[in-house]
Image 1 (cartoon, rainbow, N blue to C red):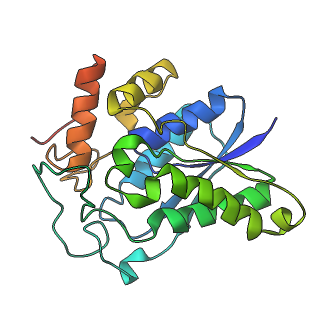
Image 2 (cartoon, rainbow, N blue to C red):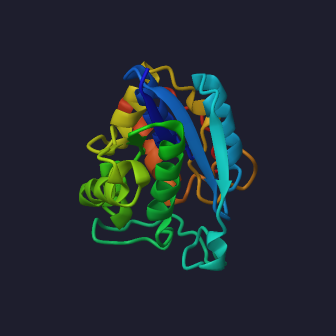
Length: 225
């Protein structure tokens, strides 16, 4: 069985991407990153999701991105609530170089486990605001992985899979439900007021709630608002 390494944050997107990898026939190895994020409880969600999906090999790497800061998720900057925003906005919840760092770590894990397939839960509603979720970035990173690794120097090629890239949040909810994801185990909120309680007002909560409504799937999430 071919191995794929999967970024597993504990959110609904990464959980669905992990379920997709398993349904596609890959042996999934999951990687979560403790980067000093405000919503660090998402790591507990990642562990629960890995267990629920039967991913036995789940690793957690610590990288202190709070030392860099520059984001509402890694510095003392307020998380925006109830914002409208536009497709041209790069929100303050953008974490400088986060996906570059995480994909680099995922590439290292791929080399160690013999994987050539990297899976990330990026989607269209992310890359409208986050430049490191754009399809051109993901394509470019596959080339970086080839050029910067021992196995790449030996002729190996890497593929970065983003199976949710063109899906709306509703599409992700439908796909995850079809693949058996237990969304009650996932955490999307950027500023949870209590463990596994969503604030209901940040961008991630608003997208999550709207996704369930549009998909017509019961929402198991606990929202403070």
